[in-house]
Image (tube, rainbow, N blue to C red; front, top):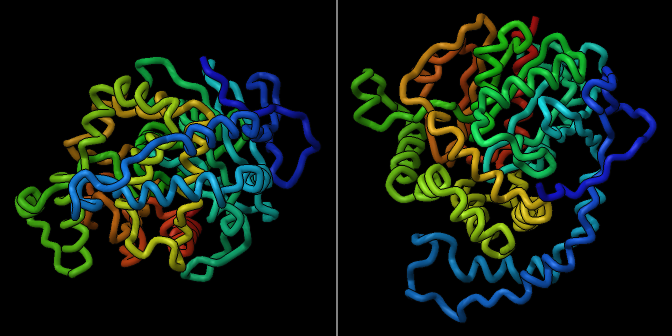
Length: 412
């Protein structure tokens, strides 16, 4: 197995230190140190020969990432992108690794100063990583109030999914339910939290929902921006007498229709032939940039980079760099192959009395109206935002922070 290229070190406990430390899980503080491989990565980027002009003029982004966009990102990667600066910023967070079920699980554990803070587990998807939650972590640890005036703060835990970045690749038959079980162990046995809340988006909605459904004594609230159930098209909604009344909802349903028609080829490739795309791009940083960068661009709000969005080209380059430098592109795409039923076609209700909260963002690739979300859990809050897309922690951090804080209204 290839090295995930970080360094486990012993450091003095800090505000982000672990609650519970035991030898069973080989808990180790962790420092990101990927600088050794950066020169080779940048050399490959610099020497990648892209066409001088579009093969077919006028196609632009309708056929995938535009050549001009990719060239601009390639140039920034080798001129203005500063890996050492980015790595230094990443190491300001409290990183750890633990050994759970023979897997190395990497995670950030940022604790609040508030002794009554709610433990909160944030689950990313693909092509995301722990990076997509960095803009919200510190604010969530601070004392605040909910919309009803209740005090709220969080101890924030952000793990890397197995096979992503610094978490080791799981066995071949690994599912999101297995990840949910491992993350429950992380929260309850490794960190010592008897109860916690969770959030999930994209493929991270799978383990988050599994926790909500299968570990209902420890997972006492769940918040989603995506569901592990296939969204329904217009005819399917009509068959359930669900009508989309607002222009915002109608626009979101059109996004889904467009994704189904022209945007999901990557899904079929990664769900059926992950080795083909994985091996083709494993040692090709510009290839990974084209494959994943197109998703960051097309799945996000067109106003990306303008406040409140923090999704700029530097974020896309950092994300691609992390995938490349940790040699995790191949193992990450296997999550689609390993989970053919990761997004269910039959809606079922979770076996829990815990509250469920949901946040929709206009430019997400999928849309679930309130009536659908009510079918899968005990929905207590549904918010729909007209700014943001598939990566809410980057697309609209203030809205995600505000919505997550609403957990405090229902936490017991």
